[in-house]
Image (tube, rainbow, N blue to C red; front, side):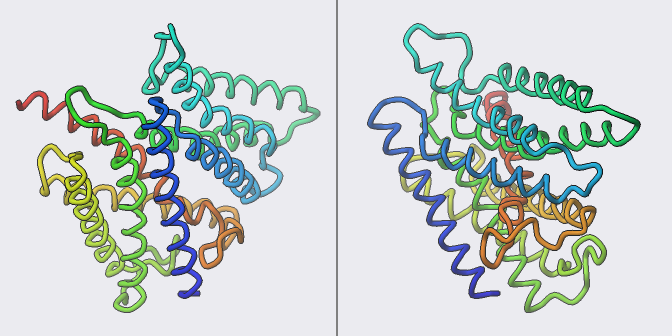
Length: 308
């Protein structure tokens, strides 16, 4: 199991790095922030993760898979559509940072879900729980990742484009927290932190995870500085606080997915990734870290402007 985790984890880290690097090269050459590799990865992962999540939800409350897939794919894809439209000549309605189109997609999905269940209604049953679970799916796999995607187009006036580094931080900081928590908990963990929700989690693992997250944040900060890119306006102190905060968000994301699996009587979300389980088991911490990172960098820019 440990060997499989190390191999699969290394391959995934290399793959994510290749996606970020390849998109940056293409974006610089064409002069447009379109990011085709991230687009393909996002829609593919969204499709597979949606299938996993729907399969965990037990009958008779399980929503229609195709309805959830449509909602998640449209919501994830609309961010890339905004980026393409904003690059079109003469188009100035919305920037890639706009939330207007995603809000329309979510609103339309709510109406569509109700319409589908009204059409399928035959007798008193579980229509409302199916609608509620459909909204859970789009919130968990559509709205939360939307904050993560918005980081790719997050820029601030007068500062170098650091969106790639911010996205890397949102991915690698919570994952390094996972890795550190796993190893520290495996070798030093004694006291269970969440014996019912996630029995293998220990307090020692949590503490080790925070150190791992802070270290990852510092390392990426110095890598960015070496490339002339600065994302932390308040230096290494902010970097450490960011790492700890994102690590905590990642732990909550991990526990949230454990809650979903326990409620659905599933050990893993799937068997897609050797040593990990399914895609949800891999990206659970990142789903919660994305919104926190997005709000952090926007709040940091606002505070830095007020202070000086």
